[in-house]
Image (cartoon, rainbow, N blue to C red; front, top):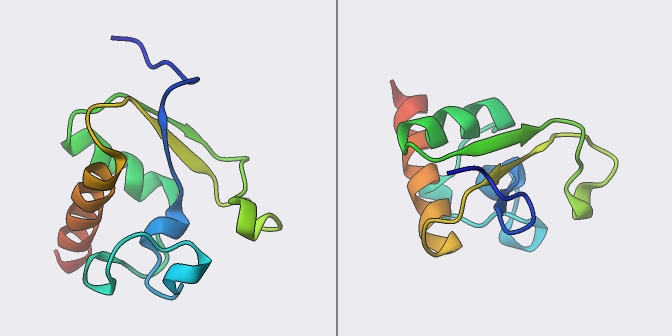
Length: 97
């Protein structure tokens, strides 16, 4: 199945950044957040979940427009909230390894 960029979920590294409060974009609990998340780590987590995705490195999180941290477009396969939690769990496991 091809990735439909118009309907894909968008995941920003800011969603998983332990140093950010929720008011600045963090979507997961601190227990599922990591230091210095990036699109490559998110991409690896999505590969483990076997989800089609596309990395866009030149994009900026709207609340952090001056920093080009990129974003990842992901095929829709359920609620975004569950996807974010699954990716957070994988990122934390990878950081502990």
